[in-house]
Length: 537
Image 1 (cartoon, rainbow, N blue to C red):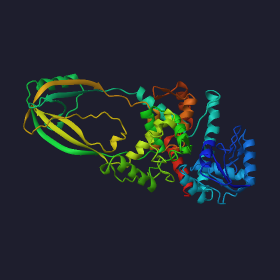
Image 2 (image 1 turned 180 degrees about the horizontal axis):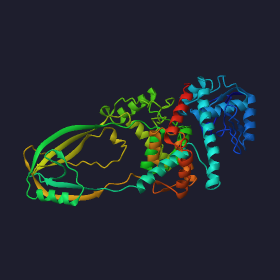
Image 3 (image 1 turned 30 degrees about the vertical axis):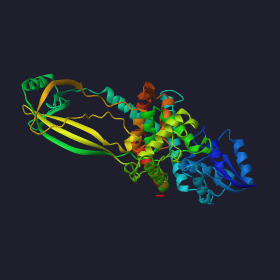
Image 4 (image 1 turned 45 degrees about the vertical axis):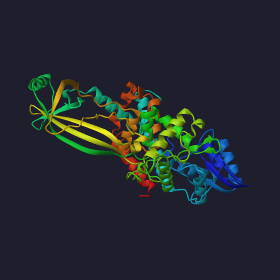
């Protein structure tokens, strides 16, 4: 007889959880979904209140029989699938197949796979949350209707085997719209004039930008305008008329959500979105460490919350005080955005004591890189701001106004560990200048430029846009981008996402015929409605 049968989604997760549970407990994996809509037909009874017709997934018969056998031998069954809507739906389907009443206390969740979290989850079981499963079913049914009703139109008009999708087609539309903007873009000429000056005491050179004349702003669009100004400045004397000193603080970014992790891993590690998620999955489910055995290293990686637990906050504080000192620590709280599904924490390390360097030898190169990114971002989120001394100098020459900005770092703070955007500092060191003193003109430079079209999307910027526009949710970004790349609607060239001819043709057909469904507003509104279902509203 089995005391407790615990069903999770993946074998890796099952193996990690096994080591926390003694006695006659058994942990098995459902290998993801076990029931779904049939592939061969719509599988939704539109006449009968959109009732879905679920079937057991082909090829899972022996697994289902094995689960049924274990269930028969178990005193208590716990459904411990992932802690999100998809996981809730898998638990609901498992309950159906194993004859468990979904209103019985059979569901357990944990946000991280640590001994405490697992034991706490099993000690606090609950009913299956039918609001979450309804939200997942609503998405599944709507996606099926859009996909199965619109795709045949593409087969008839373009070629067989094409597919449309409620979210994927909107993503393709965004990329096609951007390409059209780029193709129709008309560059405009503009000029900048810079004074390279030096102070007379230290001979230090610095750069000043022309910003106006007699206090009015100047914009330059032709060589004639530039030549006139250069002529006016031939014999000018340059005098310091104002020096403003100040201090600038930069605050750390919050810990990662799914979308910010995908963006940063793309920017800094050159990871495709799909790769980021699969590497994160291995870190969440457990890595074999000497002295520790199988250990889950990060919290659940599908989340749009920046909240962190009190325990994690305390652990971060201790780590910062021990490794950096008191002036590097700041207790920070991050608020979730209003539409965030705040059931989860942000993505953070599960064991602060396991620093990336300490476990480097147990990780693959990709796992190490991603773990270090998550670890450092989390620790930095609880550190003090970095502080810069700033100086802005105004210089006049023959009634033309120039400005120079400089800054120097006074205190590195969180930036000792993590910089969100490796931006090149636009600021330079400016010598100590006194109001009223004259500076020496070293040279005057003029430069012609042209306005640039908007950049093409990268995977990172597309995820950012999808999130900003409320299209899809953390679990959908990676599969959406993977699908449109696999279908050859877009291609990736040096990180840029570019629509193929096929993508343009499909997009045009969909927009002409289904503009009420394939549009940003409709897709975002549906996401809000799924959220309302999940919240029982």
